[in-house]
Picture 1 (tube, rainbow, N blue to C red):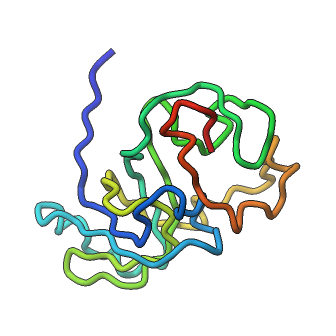
Picture 2 (picture 1 turned 90 degrees about the vertical axis):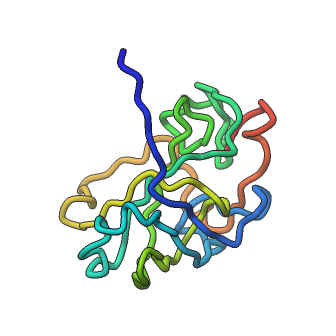
Length: 166
């Protein structure tokens, strides 16, 4: 298999310095405004981005210290396959969040509804387009048994200690 090498295009700046204060998802009532500081060499890629209200951010979960293929999610007590969760202990430690774009100021994106640690390496940005990104007849697997519980959940340090993950 060929080696995959990713290079950050910027860094995410958020108020969350510690996992204990970080929300679990961007839809959480605990999510917060922040910025994406895009590196100068990627500035041209920001052209026309200001016309979108929401963005999909792909980033590296740089504080995830191990991998687990089975985790016990924070909304459940049953071990699940990591790919059936949003746990950070996935093999490539990739994160994805849909956030609100407030404005573009040079190479700084002002964002709302951030749920990641300050200093998180940003790998890519895609515009959120409802016609592309809102599928119909969605099933949510085991999460259908936990409606509404994610809104006030915070992260924790379990995923850095080798124990079960969030």
